[in-house]
Image (cartoon, rainbow, N blue to C red; front, side, top):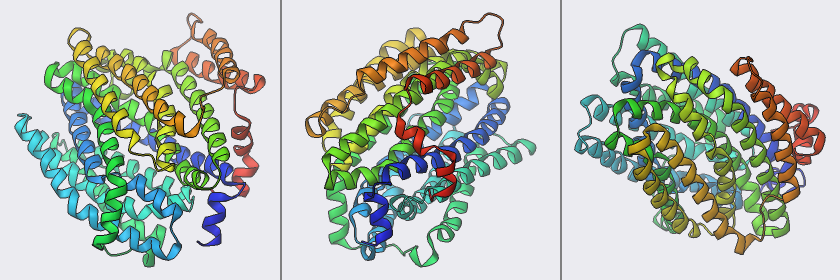
Length: 489
């Protein structure tokens, strides 16, 4: 293995690189989220409650199809590339591409057929096909960009994230300007796919963008190691999207629209722990191979970061959720604020189970995720069926939070026998609760505008947390501006 890559994953600086890499990805994601909020605001204002619900439903269906077609290769590929000699990486990536080309069209055809059989409007069926083609192209580029993940070159990946959102905003603006109906909005995904494929060789180097290969022994080995993870990921994607799909079938268009608009905002927030987990996976894989004590330490510190981030968002959303949804979608989407206020409670559990999931992958124990995700899927389905009919969109939000809590518990149950006790320490959790209690006072100030109260609560939480030690020391050190500016991400 080349010295640069080996040092990046196994040196004493690896933890700092993971945190700073997470900052680059989260920073790019935050900038992208600002752009995404602008795009979502335009879409929701222009399409209205019912049509925007159809828009989110289609994107959710396609996301399920892509998770099936991925077969767990993105996560498995990150782990395998982390342990691979440099000369073997291009061949491995080429076989990733070959598998994508063989499998993805089948998955996309199946989801388009589902849309047709579910008697969705023609615009949704055509939109499913268009969005699927675009996301297929992005998935091919993602296979090549795995190289950057393993090399901890996260600034380039942050640029790709921002590029996608920028194209979305530009496409939405153009379509609204010409007075387009729903279907063309899905074609924006095709434009994104073309752009990402075009920019990828410039980021990884033209000589590192391999042609697809179909080496049966390599692909058989990849499928053997990735299929258990694939089953878990498919169940996880179904789990995250199941409520909106069920609502499209058993609830009104209005309630589906409220839930769908809140889900879009929630997806923006939930993407951050997913990015952090992806950045951490190569280092966790190296630690799982070489030093279990170091692995446990890394998991515990990541858990603490997840708790702090989850508590911060929950506090801020208590007052900010409703005005944010009004800003994004207009007064017609005001009821979605109450839905979002409930949904953000899931972020605490999402952050933890994403870390525990990649920890199991790093340990090569991805088979253990199948049972957990299957039980989580069953749980969220039961919650949704019980709560959506009487409570509508709010019931869907409660079902999602309960499902995430269940899933986090189940994944920790599978991780602890292997990694040991890696739960957040009681003393640390108490300090977070104290900081949150102080910050909550700002939320109760009468007459204070909602967004001002939310911002004040967030500032108080971080300030008090810093004073009483509720922020992990590794996080404070790694986020020192001098270190971020002087080192590679």
